Length: 183
Image (tube, rainbow, N blue to C red):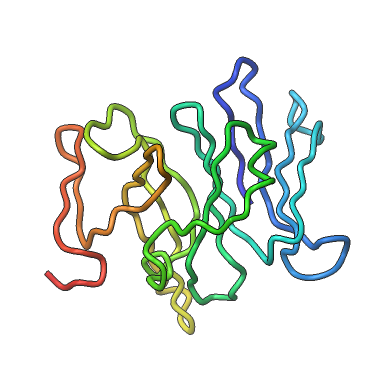
């Protein structure tokens, strides 16, 4: 579950979450609910069902294009997170969620999407966001870690930087090695 504040004229606030679909099944419905101005009620609710069991939704917007990243429901195990893009919040719910954030089989660098951290003034090929993913360790959840990596947004889609290490220097991302490579 998360909140998204749009940069539109009235700074609309959306609650994004997974729930049971008609009281059946775990995370069978993905919901994006526009909140009232006081944030105490739902003004508009967009619901997507029949997309499988999805959770951990994250929305970000770049160049007037919305991206919704989600994880499949797989307990504490990581999986290949997917995304959909659209020109409006409501259109996100029409997507097929079939595009992978990271190379298929990497299980999104062994993580589950959690947040898109905004940065300002990024130069080069990457967006103004850093992917923040939860890397659960089960058993031993108290030893769980995070996976942070830059998000690449182009006209052809979204991908995560495949980097073992990276730094943000002089408004550019500098990388070394790939995520599964010892350096």
